[in-house]
Image (tube, rainbow, N blue to C red):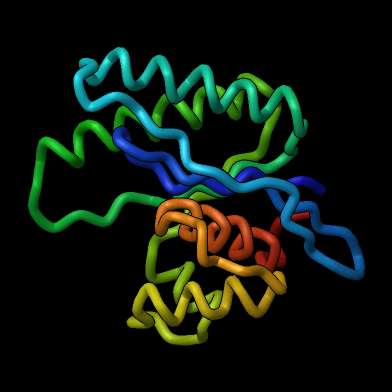
Length: 158
């Protein structure tokens, strides 16, 4: 099974692909989709959609694991990220993928066993679980890997 993990945003979208089989979970790819700050939100959403479609075409994942929204304040940011999530979920469903959404709390619990874990603790567990070096990865990319790892541990996914 190949899992596409996404940390949504409209400036940066974290993307990861994990392959899970009976004995191991392997990172196939991770990156950040970066958009141009000078473009409108609709142009940025189009760019993100195109890039996500390329990843799906190349790796043929069967599962999308996407981080659910958790924002306390900035309504403008929430609206933009919600729109991006909608596009990504639509593309996944259009490609026959199963979609699983995880809150930051669920991801932290799955990886560290503690819902109030900080970014460094989550990063540490991502690094240990996949034997990776995280030095050159942006936080969004690490968050996408963490989301995919959460799906890989989800017993409801077959």
